[in-house]
Length: 186
Image (cartoon, rainbow, N blue to C red; front, top):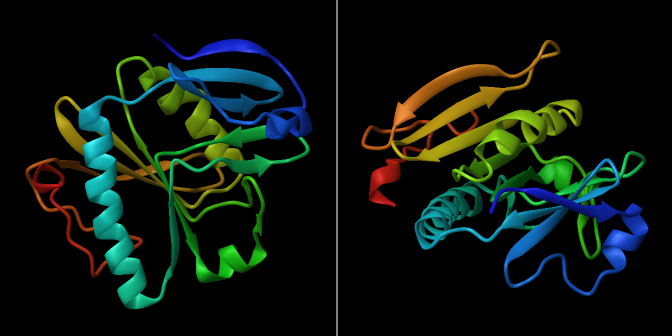
C-alpha cells in the first residue's frame, strides 16, 4: 500500500480523532488532506528502535534534549500540517518553546525517516519539503536496501546533503559529533 489521501479535515478535526491511524496504517495531515501511511515492517521498526535507543542514551548522557518516536508533530498549525517522523529530536531550547498536548506543536531540530518502498517518494519529496518549510535544521533519510543514511542540513535554498554513509560504516552525525553509529549493528 502506498501513501493515499483519504479525505480532508481541519487540524482540530484531525486531532479530535480518537486514534491517528488504523490497524492497516497511520495518518498524517498535510495541508488539510488526511494521508494514510502503511504500517512499518518489522525490519523498519527494529532499526527505529535500535537507533532511537542509541540516540536517547546519548541525548540523556549529554543533557541535550528529548527524543520522540513516531509522535505526531504539528509543524504548521495555520496550514494544517501534522506529521509523524520515525524519530524527532527536540533540543532543550526548542522543547521549551513547544506546546505538548495530544501532539507536539513545534519544530524539531532533527527528524529521522526510515524509507520504505511504499513511502520513499513521499518522504523524499513532499514530506522533506514540509520539513524544510518548517525550518527543521537536520533531516536523516535512511534506506533499508541497501542500508545507508543520508544526512541533510537546512539552508535557505533547500536541504544540503552533508554526507551519505553506508550501513556498515561508522556514521558520525554533524549535529552530534561525539556520537558514532553503525546502522548495520543496530
